[in-house]
Amino acid sequence: LPPVGIVRINIESGRGFVIEKRWLGADDVPDVYLCVTVGATLMQSTSTTTPTASSPTVWRTPTIMDDLNPTWNVTKDFLLWDRAQEIKIHAWDEDESPLDPDDDLGEACVTVTELLLSPH
Image (tube, rainbow, N blue to C red; front, side, top):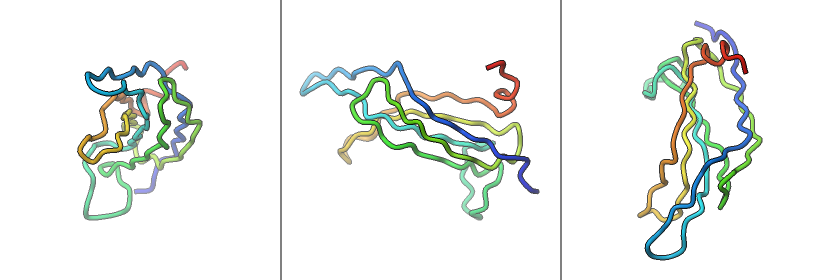
């Protein structure tokens, strides 16, 4: 089936991130990046490279270093296969050490239909 349209995601800025207090060493101001997922499910299809509702597209923003209120001002278009597709935005604190995985800062999820029906 052909896509039903295109959804344009504009990531402007984030706020409300906090400094991670550390017992040893300097406190950590987050180096924030976002992973934006557009798709009906979170399963990645390995049998095809063609986007479908069951194989979401993931977009990673640039990392904004040492900022509690990062500004990205970046835009990306995604094919829309179904208005029930979810848009998930997941915030991460990038860590440089391979022994220290990136820290989960939180996520938000909404369907395309919910956005279209939103008064904002």
